[in-house]
Length: 158
Ligand code: HEC
Image (cartoon, rainbow, N blue to C red; front, side):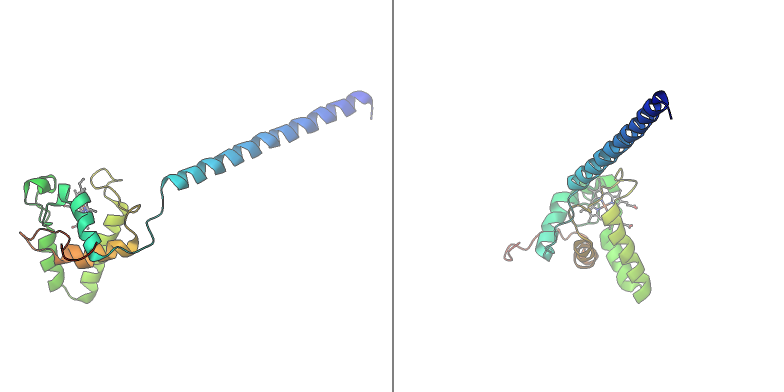
C-alpha cells in the first residue's frame, strides 16, 4: 500500500463518517421536530369532566353549530341545518342494545376525530378524553330534548 492509496482510503473513510454524521444529525433533528409536534398537541386532560363541566363545554364549543338544545334548529344551529341530537336521543332509546351501542361508539369516534379532517367539525381529542366523549354522548347528547337548553345546573359546582 503506497502513501497515495492510504491517503485516498483516509479521505474515503472520513467522507463515510461525515455522511453518517449528517444522517445522524438529520435523525436527531427529526426526533426533536417530532417531539416538538407531540408537545404541540397536548394529550386530553386526565381528570374526567363532570356532567356539569360537559354541559358548560357544550355551551362553549358546540352550540355554534349544534344549537343551544342540540336540535340545531335555533339560529346558532343553522350551520347544521337541523341535524338533531334530540331526535337521535329518541331514536337511540328505541334501538335495541347492540345497535344503540354501535351508534354511540360512532358518535364518540366522531367527537374524537372530527369530520372531514376537522373541516366540517373540529376534532375534540385534545380537550375531551375518550371517557369525556363517552359521557358527553351518553349523559348529555342523548339526554337532549328539543327546546331544553343544554347548560350547567346553577346549584351544582362545575
Ligand atoms: C363547526 C361546526 C361544528 C361544531 C363546533 C361542532 N360540530 Fe358536531 N357536527 C357538525 C357537523 C356538520 C356534523 C355532521 C352532521 C351530519 O352528519 O348531518 C356534526 C356531527 C356531530 C356528531 C355525529 C352526529 C351523527 O349523527 O353522526 C356528534 C356526536 C357531534 N357532532 C358532537 C359534537 C360535539 C360534542 C361538539 C362540541 C364539543 C360539536 N359536535 C361541535 C358540526 C359541528
